Structures are given as structure tokens and as C-alpha cells.
Amino acid sequence: MKKVLMIDIKKCTECGLCELACSYKKEGEFNPRKAGIYILPKNVLVCRHCEKPLCAEVCKVGAIIKDELTGAVLIDDQKCIGCRACVAACPFGGIILSPDGKVVKCDLCRGNPECVKYCFIGAIKWEESSKVLAGARRLHR
Image 1: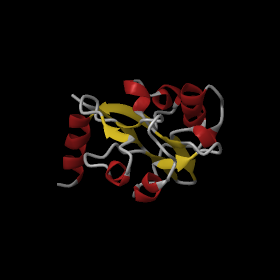
Image 2: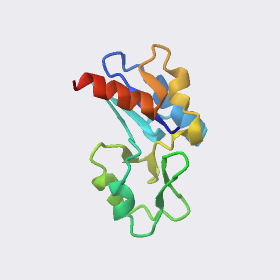
Image 3: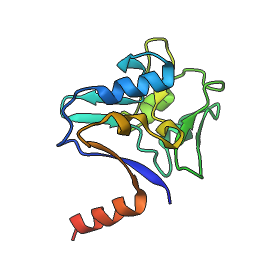
Image 4: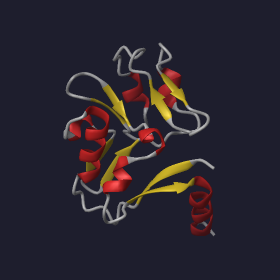
């Protein structure tokens, strides 16, 4: 069963530990501007790994793919030309351009998200998608 990141914005204290953990895992430095998750006042922006990602559709060089096994939407840095079409296409603000011009987004840490490990208050969870769908159904009854 595929898993998804679930973020409870009501629990989020905007401490930024998730950004630091992400940037360190991805880039080897504590720099929130190089993280794949972004904390804003009363909002957390992160790739939602869409079923049909618009970012992949607009990528003219095929640098963005969906891993069918994990469900993660991934960027191949070797193919990416930095045109930023994916940044503009993402309706959730889940892709940014880092200070060094690199396109950055969440890659789910290849199935072991660092942000979840360091969110000590439990605002970010890594859950099976079936549980998420069941919870959504209960909310809409």
C-alpha cells in the first residue's frame, strides 16, 4: 500500500525543524531555502505527489517522473534544465527554485521522510493512503 504525507496545520507550530531536517538530508546543510517542504504562516507547502502531476506534463525535457511503485513524483537533476515551468504549473506551491538555481521539491526521502522523524509534535505523519481516504470519507458524511 502506498503511503502519503499528512500535515495537520492546526498542530504545526512553524518551528521549522522539518525544513532543516529535509535540507540536511537532501543537500547536507541546514538551509530551509533548499528544503522540499516550506513553512509559511498558517500553511505548509509540500509536493502532494499528484496522481497526474501537472509539473510532469509541462516538463519539456522529461525530467519529472512518477514512480509507480512508491507514488512519489521525482525530478531527475541530470535532465532538469531549470526552466521553472514546473514551479509555475504546481497548483500547491510544492516546487521552488533554491538560491543556487536548482528546482527543489519533496521526494518523500525515497520512502523514509525526514520531516516526519523530526516533527516532534506530530503535525506531519506518514500514513497509508487507505487510512487517509477512509478518514476523508468519514469527514464528508
